[in-house]
Image 1: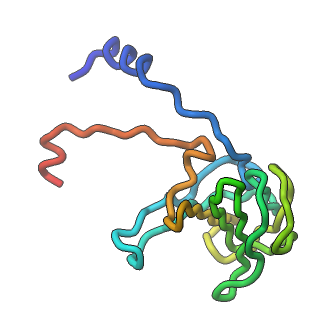
Image 2: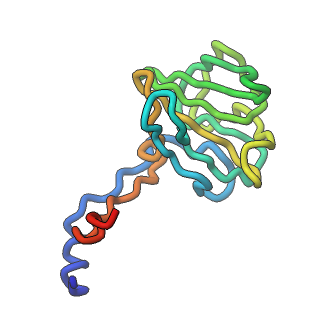
Image 3: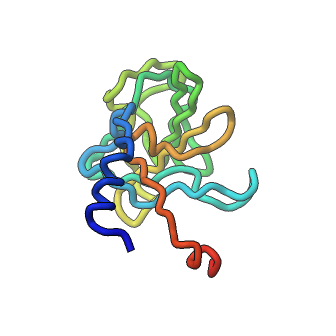
Length: 157
């Protein structure tokens, strides 16, 4: 069992969580409703993004980018931005207020939240880097620290 002093010392030695590099893309509380869950194979089940609470009607550009897609996919409005670094950021369900080829700036209103993805107003934000999905937590400044379990907990599964 670790003492309070040991825990405080460990917390002081941990590097701080990095600052967000993106603007939060919804209005209101900065809260994740459903987390990223990587699939075990390229076509396997998973949750390839984050579902974010949307307390207001607007979707905001998280960073400077170019609109690479604005339209419907499987009956839902989808908007995809390409950053200068080549990252693809997708939002759904949205009604896009921008068109393919438009340049957007950080914080600019780019769409409206549409119903149909969560039980409450939300948007799904996905991030692809080099063709692979990964969580946008780092860019949004919501990293979670790893939690180490005692070895006996690991052995039990």
